[in-house]
Amino acid sequence: PLGEKFVGRALGDVAEDDINLSSVKEGTIILGFKVKAEKRMEELALKFKTKIGIFKVIYQALDWLKEEIKTKLPKRIIEKKLGSVKILKIFGKKGESQIVGGEITEGVAQEKTEFKISRRGNVIGEGEIAELEQNKIKIKEVSSGQLGLLVKSKIEISPRDALEIFKKEKQGA
Image 1: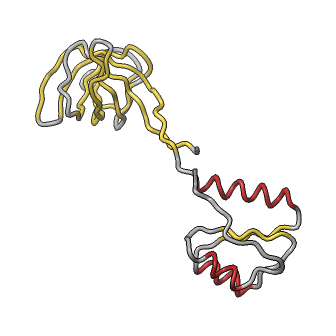
Image 2: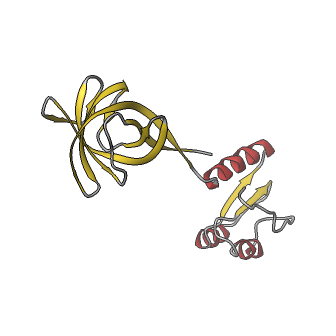
């Protein structure tokens, strides 16, 4: 998935030619086994954003290489479900902002999280919770009962809609 390829192999210590060959692409890795790299080669590699790994034991080289490849893999974004809110009433709308009243049916609702809008079992859009209130007091999280929400969404929310609240998290691939 990374488009990795070997561009050269040689015997002997890491030389200037190795660094020059690696300078074609940023993030190149030079892997040395039972060799040396002079301080000048390390400085040149740093200039070209090339990493040099020198090892005496092959399994250490393999472990290091696996970790280097992991850092180059794209991160996946996962949606962690926090809770659900059933919409009971709409209090107002201005642009993409809406003030709605609802009730927690599962989990929690948190300020500054995202949600999916479900209507009759179908997801019809998404939005973000800007503010939460319970008993006319602004709070950051509600875990039970009725609440008021200031939400931002391009989709107009209606009574009986369900908001599936989630948080996006980055996860290594």
